[in-house]
Length: 259
Ligand code: SF4
Ligand code: SF4
Image (spheres, rainbow, N blue to C red):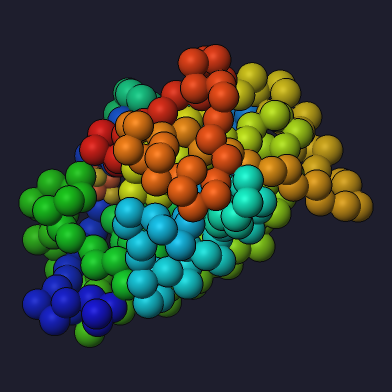
C-alpha cells in the first residue's frame, strides 16, 4: 500500500482556528507532556490494547512495524503479547486549555500531536480530509500542505518523526508506570481498549519514580474481552484472562465505539 493515495498527493490547508479538534478528542501525550498535563491540573486516560499473533486486526507493513515499536513485549499466561500503552489528555468535551475565543491558552507549549493535526503520525495511514474536524474553508486555502503525498513544511515533517521516535523511546517507561499503578489488563487489538483514569497525584508520582529509576520493571499482563468468543479465543492462544472485569479498575471500550 502506498503511503498516500495519488489523488490526495497534493493538498492545500491552513488552520482557520475553529477549535473543533480541541473538543471531544483525547490528545496523545509524551511522558513529558503528560507530566505537564498533571501539573496543570488535567486528567489523563491510559488506553491499552495488545497484539497477539492471533489478533483480529493485524496491521501490516510499516504500520505493523510502528505498532510493534511502540509496544512493550510482555508475558501473558503462556504467551507473549505486545502491549501498546497510550497516555492521552482526557478531553471528553472542550480541552481545558481552550479559551472562549477557541484559542489555545498554551499555544507555545501545546503537545506535539496538537502541532501535527490534521496530519497522521502512523506510517502508511492515509490522511482523509473527510475524517478530520477541519471545516471546508481550511482545505480551500492557498498554503501547500502535502506535495507528492509528503508534508510541504519541513517543520511538520520533523515533528512527525519526533513524535514517532519519542513514542518508541518511551515504551518501557510507560509500561513501568502501569506496573507502578497496578495497571495490567489489556484488550486484544481489534476487540477494543481498556481505559484507566488514574488518580493524578499517584500518576505524577509514578512517572517521577520510574523516570529516575535505574531499572525498569515491567509486569505481566492479562486480557479483558468483549465476548465469550473472544475470551475463548484468547485462552486458546495461551493468554491470561483477567479475573477483575467487574472491579471498576478499568472501563472496556469496544472497538466499535473506540475512536
Ligand atoms: S492543548 Fe491547546 S491545541 Fe491542544 S487540544 Fe488543548 S486547546 Fe487544543
Ligand atoms: S479543526 Fe482544523 S481548522 Fe479547526 S482548529 Fe483544528 S486544525 Fe484548525
